[in-house]
Length: 88
Image 1 (tube, rainbow, N blue to C red):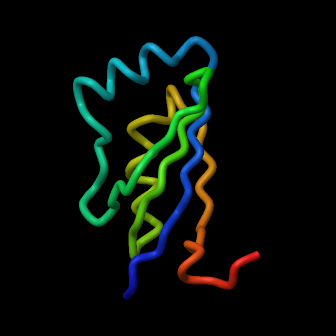
Image 2: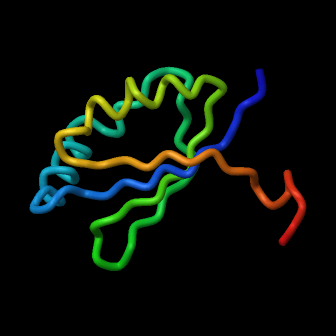
Image 3: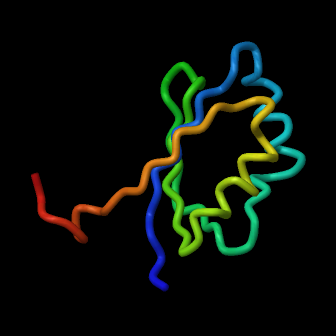
């Protein structure tokens, strides 16, 4: 199987931003093997994080998000990089 890319949009739940960063500093991303982090960006208010990830098994996202569901709501969107698809 080939690796597919996904844009993960994390919406921090109200009053949970500090807890998100605290857990991250102690435990890291807690990604299961086979789910790869590529890069991330945070909005200026620090309430939304955008992460580019790769995997050949999209079911690994449920394993990963279970570690964070109490603090974060997730949107996970399959994407194609501009080098992989026609440009707009």
